[in-house]
Image (cartoon, rainbow, N blue to C red; front, side, top):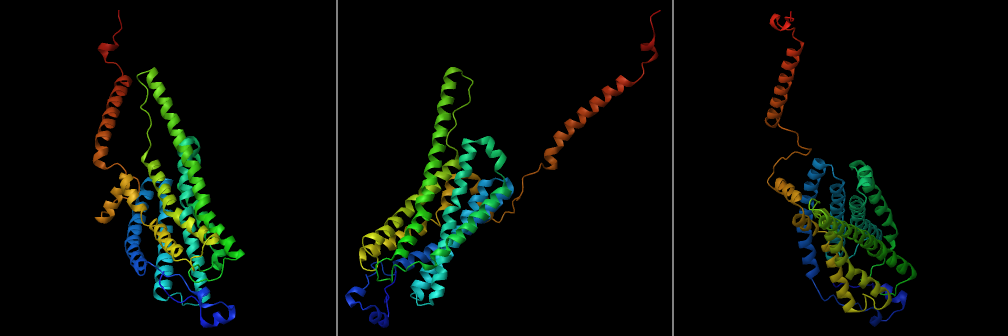
Length: 365
């Protein structure tokens, strides 16, 4: 990102490479990435913290599994911003020019990939949950509840942490002047499969099934409406499904350039040698990291309950964290009607059980 020497003088002698071969491609953007990532960090972290607080309120209030999954996505985005943007891009690259111990450099690299995988794969259970809710509603009522959602989120986070360990040996594409090795090839293909091809395939299949199911139901309801005037109105695309489609679509668009550039770097031209690939790699990273800060605006645009929760948090309103209970004023009319009904029934029962008066008890002679 910032222009710094790639290798030391000792490495020139050890590798036997000419200065032309070791010359690194220039960073065309200069300090623009540093400014961009600084703004993204200053905006993204507070926005995601606000999102996490609002989603926590909604999760406690409604007990819907969707909010637990969205909360996991938000927490993973915060970790990605801290490890990838703050530690990786700003501290290691812009401040220290990656002149840090190799062990620390590789450890941070593994943490970056783990946070990245968690941020992406936390969306997969949300997609599966929405698919089951819309296509198999009876099954969804049986298997979808907060305790199970928390267990699924924990499993996803543990698997993401484990998947980041192999990337301890990830090669630094900005500094490495040698062609990609077999290890680099395996790691790059593993990376693009985990962060793009596999989750996007799941999103595409499940979202297609959701849209197909909704269209079939709409056609069936329209045909029923033609037969009888008292049929239910056709079911449209819900806001929850629209939110899911927006999240997955934005992810697919923002991460596609980085996936293409990484594969291009592997087989066509290296980031180290070609300034155009270097420029494309910087821009694709900037687009990919933008995905960690846009979900808040998608939630606000689609979800009215989320906007209300954000408004309560910003205005420091201590809204209830648990489901509303009826107030005493609201219960008064109901209680009055119940008491009157009870008193009426009581009087009726007393009248029925009271012995007849002498006039009533008089028998015909």
